[in-house]
Image (tube, rainbow, N blue to C red; front, side, top):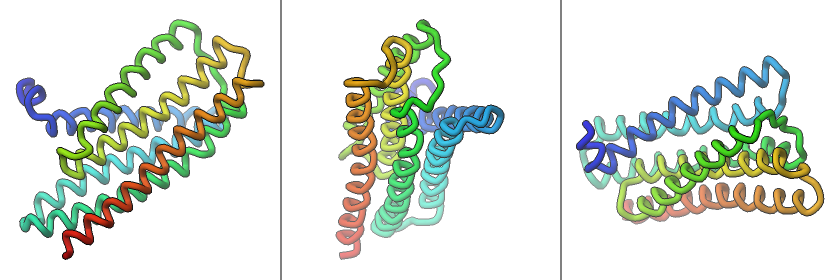
Length: 218
């Protein structure tokens, strides 16, 4: 098991994605509880976002398993995989749309921050590690691996980028004077840039999958 985790990148990707799936389920439930119990809009909105990530990861696992079991012809398998990848990218795009509400509330300071200094620093360290790993894996899987692995890494990258936004807001609120003045401009720009990257990347992936689908058809 440990040797396979070390030597098999695809298997390692599946295992880490499965762990991320359950962690995201827990985080979704936690934020949904806070949203209902304390009537906090931001927690309800971010719960919707993470629920869509859960749906997307589950869809990726289910689709890959179904394809491997039911499709034997290599060319047909590529076509089916591309069609499913297109639908997954559409869900990823819709996930970006769902992100508009919670990030807007962060910029407008409608999210409560109850962290002390130590948890905030720990959050910063974890987020730095998370985004570093996500970017590294995203670059690594761009050309050399299948669409299933690529989609899992796309999801992880979107997840990590949102963690950066949450971290930015948390640090500004704890160590700064809130999202005001120049800081408001900075937060607005970085938020729009990260959200724009997630959205444009999903659209570009859809276009690329349509082109590949046409090539396989020909």
